[in-house]
Image (cartoon, rainbow, N blue to C red; front, side, top):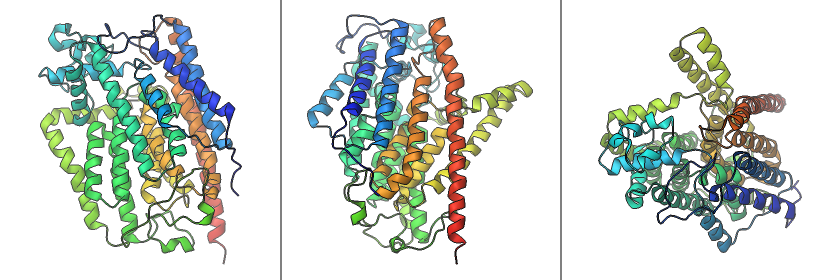
Length: 531
């Protein structure tokens, strides 16, 4: 049964507009507990002629994320199309570029690493505090504790930081603004790539362009993850268009921007292997149906029941090749990826690669694994506790992926999209170190998956989508206002929420997924037991 849809939802649009407006106000208001100081503006856009107090900023950010989460929740419960016109999109992009990044001080790190690179240094071996005796006008803007940290970003991402530093010159605000232009271009580029994939524009604009969990955490925070996700979208599109070599090159660009973005290559390889076997992966066995006449990993032609589902995808991907051996395309995919990864990392050196891979051992306060790490740290040494917790988190991601694979069974025949959703969501829910902007790949995969759902698929997927929206909203709130150095009263409240509310919300999702998985297994057992 197709869910009821209204043509307009004034309340939902008001919630969304208010959410975006409040977050834009935080970024436009200059230095605050959410916006680190950047010094003179230079030729970059100036901030508004006032400064917001600490609790005012917290209230604005909190309200913005809550209203944004409610707008998504309302859309899931009462699906309505969101149609952005070109001038609305241009206005939103212009308003974003009138703000300064907020929520973290990561953009000061990006500016510093780019500056060190263009000045002839090695950002993977030189910490900002040691560069030119702490007198450089751009590098000196880095906040503690990152003044003592070298770059953990891939070569492509760092070279783009260098481009921003080269264009921005010796004024930190100018460097950051050029970086923001790159981020906004990637955000809009991802939107265009999603549309070219066949996802209906209202779905893209609802779940990517205006999604506050993307716009607030990723774009307004000017995070490198936004650039990596754009390359992921390109890789996914090229893979689905049967261009494995080009998809591999795009995967290499994604992974060379941020290593974890290489997961898109895993999803594409997964789809190729599934298609070559012409059978379902282990654990996905189900009774044959008429849809099974189509090769695994390929989308069947739209049928009448697929017309305008809540996910609103137009058309679809039709296989242009038979389900033959995937060895050759898999090798081209892997070869294309290595063609970017290997030379890029050889250029920066083994020490840089080691630094990039070492960055994966963090344990964030907002995840349940922090309690595990703390308990182990009391009983063992810190390195043992960290290593053990990292491996436990990896095992948790595997279990979550298994559950999500079962829960998404039958939602789409496009295996690459399903695999990307499963892998990115399992990481967001189960990794040891997760921050709000780390979820951008998950929302990319979610937007594409929603575009493929039939009415029945939407009905089945809706409970899981509601869980993800609620949990991601709590995670975003856990990093309000986001900076490390805060007034004591603000720090007490924000860290308390981060230490308690966010881990509990994630635990609740784990429990809910376990219950949903158990029910799915029970239903499946009942189906397969029939004569």
